[in-house]
Image 1: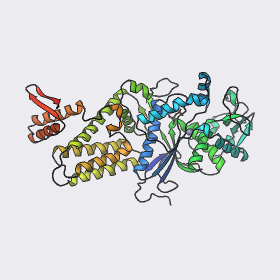
Image 2: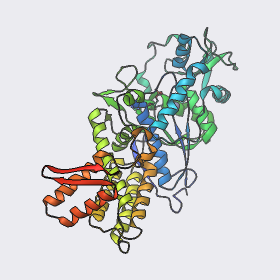
Image 3: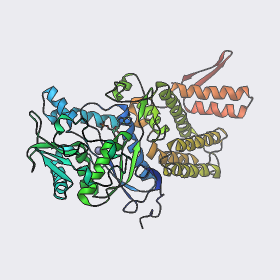
Image 4: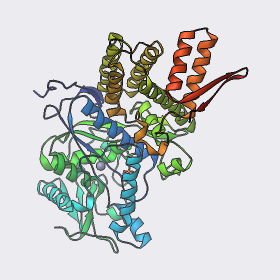
Length: 480
Ligand code: AMP
Ligand code: ZN
């Protein structure tokens, strides 16, 4: 059996194949092998693409949190129609053209705090594997050569359409065919190898010079790195058809084995009801947002706050709300740093820490329910804030609470501002955070809760803040 090993919590994922929630049982217990379709590096990715890449970052971090060892592979599509056209227009070779976009892609991942996958294979470096797979398909009768190109014979695959529910009969013979695909036996067949055209980069093959089609790139690279059958394959929902459907058809026909066990797809980032896309022109790059002063930490939080299978409507207001939520969490962090421990450790604090880690893990195990995981975190923040204000933190409780936060941050990756240099507030509390403490102290005084007011004053003094109560209210300054 392939059930979870000790210490591993078994998650449930929504599998696009079969369209249902399914308990995750990897081929090898405790190990998750994940392939994620990467960017086409013909220009800078937009934040819609980044939503999908950060969903995949969430998946790998969650699997690890739940006890799995993760191997994630993400391809870089550095040869296809768009990269070739871009290189031709710029008058440079393919590598020169794609190099800055590959660098920009990794810079964006770093800016958003995404972890690196274990491998980023490039299509141009795996042409031999693609040719080998196409040869197998031709030998087994699933593909045929025509005028230097090779096509997948869709009529040979009885199961075609099982991922997307696509009905082959709906695509009729005689429909318009792309100009470079005349000669197909059947209009529904798709290209595996494109025969050479003038001025295009080419590689030698048994069918003459040419280049691979897009779909075969992912089949060849995923099986090369993860095996002919592996656990999870991801992408955005627009990848389901035809890309992933074709990947299944060609890989299973070539190997005779099941290809992927769990297909996970993230929904789109949308703008006013439309998918954010280059072709609609309704997109922002991460650079656009940084130039507008957007905090990348708030964008990461925004992606986490909405379940990956829901459409996310992008607005600046929602980014502001995420910034405010982060402020509350920052405040908890710095109050913990300055909290005074008194007496023995409190069972209530230890209990809250255990509940945070357990509740957070349970939420993730339910198809990555991040909104619930964040609700668990805010419940914890409330409990700990109350304990600090009530002087209910005993020996070791601060470290315990900090450790629990650090543990959930292995998935969230947003709680430690010192890892986000762009935010620029890694040296102590911000003015807003201090003002918030001053306001709380004023509220306690208004309620005649002198104990709480004094404790807040102590906390402010410990932070080096000088308070002065005047007839017009409390003013403060940072001590020298
Ligand atoms: P591409 O470079 O076009 O292959 O896209 C890279 C990834 O971004 C793919 O997994 C797409 O499914 C995904 N993607 C494209 N547009 C969006 C969007 N608006 N929201 C979320 N993901 C997207
Ligand atoms: Zn792919």
